[in-house]
Length: 218
Ligand SMILES: NC(=O)c1ccc[n+]([C@@H]2O[C@H](COP(=O)([O-])OP(=O)(O)OC[C@H]3O[C@@H](n4cnc5c(N)ncnc54)[C@H](OP(=O)(O)O)[C@@H]3O)[C@@H](O)[C@H]2O)c1
Image (cartoon, rainbow, N blue to C red; front, side):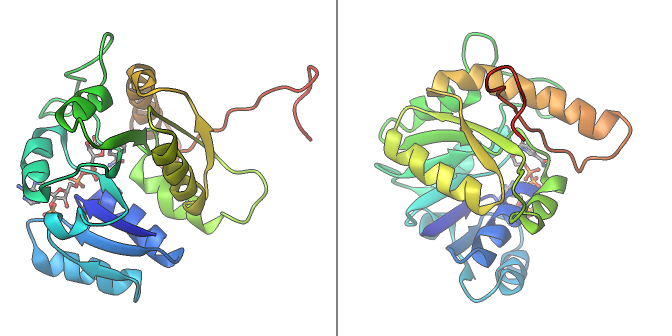
């Protein structure tokens, strides 16, 4: 698959690197520094290239990984996104990253889908800190994987998202339609609290267990 990265920072840089190493073609875009994009692509391997947001937007799947305040700018530079699978890890945070600016009755993912009426938006990856991504990928062959919730309204786009979630070493958990991002986005603030404010460090992932016949799976 060809994956375009809109926002090549902590999340986009790492996820793009992981997908390139997993064998996907990756276009890194949207940084203040073209040299940084070139270095990311070089280090990610031969299937990665640096590009513009418009080039990233030509890919089969696109990861949106920018601060909420930059969403309009990057989308404008990306151009036409009709029909595109748009996976967003961007959270609707204020400029100081202290609070959600959209919550309770709507989610950032729904606000994004309203901007991109013809794109197929999936909310995924926002519920884990960037610091855990390489570790999870390194442990991808283990049987017990961390969970990763995702949600969206388009079945095909969700299949693409699930494939990329698996490629990154997580167990995809389909949480339902896009409006469920109203729950997953605030959940991320809990994850951030545990990762950055409590002991143990930010290399934190989570795992949901469903009991079968009253017992945990062996
Ligand atoms: N970091 C996490 O652990 C984490 C976890 C879950 C969700 N999220 C969410 O994921 C999204 C991305 O977070 P992040 O931590 O990856 O952010 P980040 O490290 O700041 O990356 C953002 C990227 O956008 C680029 N950018 C910003 N303004 C730009 C401009 N005017 N022109 C060109 N490029 C510009 C940055 O350029 P430079 O390369 O020059 O910096 C960087 O590559 C956010 O919405 C955040 O809330 C983050």
